[in-house]
Image (cartoon, rainbow, N blue to C red; front, side, top):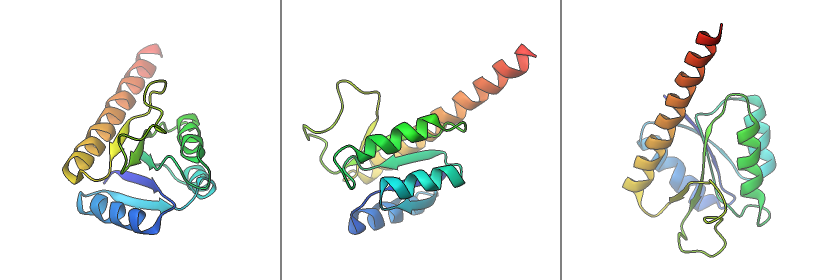
Length: 133
């Protein structure tokens, strides 16, 4: 079962997304702040880190994604939002994937795609490593 870290400071949103992801077959842990998410990433491995952009500060979600990308286990990462048209989203100048929370089927499809791409990259890295030796 793929492990997802869901980071959202709004309790109703976090609980709803957690329920949807669990119903989709994922093992979900949640965090209410960037600091809590960073602590959890340091203690456990996740296949996907899914975070809201705005947590305790306007850029806290990007801090979570940056920390996730530095982890040796290389989780897939994405921003989740209910406001896809928001001007605050770093769409133009960032590789971050944005997942719209209101579209449940789209959310679960995108999560599955992200976790699948991560698994493919991991296999490719292992193959390159084994061929190098």
